[in-house]
Each structure stands twice: as structure tokens, then as C-alpha cells.
Image (cartoon, rainbow, N blue to C red; front, side):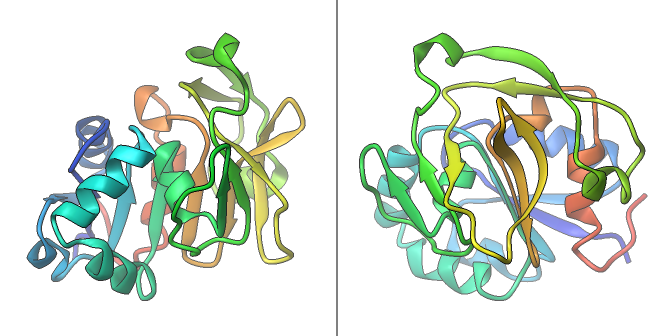
Length: 198
């Protein structure tokens, strides 16, 4: 059975994730209502503006359905999504899903990295499960991931800071892999869903 991945579609760059997953052969569903979580194998929380995302989640009565889904299924957060998945958010303090054991420091790289494309050399833990090679990374007002717990595995770093991390069924990227032609990060996420793709 082909995996069915949801993409939170209240705000942010959800359509680029949709295109990447379709390229990999996964079925997708945009999530805007509590009923949209039904039957999903996993969920992507895209980049965007984390404060706005929380506002919309509360307005649409999606906070508790989202928390329940995150507690039971694989979830991949990029940029703002990585902020939502954190155990703690600073700069300024903000609500969090507490799914992954790290602190997300919002906008921590400063305005000079509001938008930047760079190349990362992934850690062996990433390359052992995908094809080897450098990873293109698009940073847009990226958070820094700090104070990682023992259960968090670093898959890639930028300027010595973790920017792609994994913890059990969860994956978080401070950058935007959906804005590149490299499908490996999304492929890694789909591998957590327990269904075939393509």
C-alpha cells in the first residue's frame, strides 16, 4: 500500500512539500480540519511563520487533534515546523508540541541569513540510509536547534549547529529541503511511514 502523508496546510510552503512527495510516489492530503488527520501514515509541518501557525491552529480547533496525531505517528517539521516540534522555544518564548528533545531558538542566525542557499556535508547517520553526497540547503529565517537531548541524532550541521535531526519517528530540519531538487530528506521521512512508495 502506498503511504498517505498529510501536510499541514494552514499557512506556509506546503505545496512544495506536496510536489516533492508526489515525485517520490507518496499519496498526499492537505490538512486543514481535524477530520483530515484520519487515515494518515505521517504528517509534514511546513515552513512558514510559527506564531501565525499557532494562531491558526487555535482558531481552527486543531491543537488537540495535532497533539494526538504527533503522539502516535511520524512527523517531519521544516523551519517553522521544526520550531513547533521542539520541547522549548525561545527568542521569544512560544508554545511547543514537545515532540522532540531540543530547544528551538527562533531567527537565531540573524538577518544575514534570512535567505541563503548553502551545501551541507551530511553526517554518516544520514548517508548510511540514503545515497551519499552533499546536501543543498535553503535557509530562510532559520531557527537554531540547541540543547539536544540524548535521544536526538544529528544528521547534518551548518556552522557547527545541528540543522537536520531525528528522534524516533520524528524528523526536523532548520532548512527547506522541499525547495531543492534533492529528495533524500523526504525519502528518509517516508521510510518512517511503514508503507511502500512509488
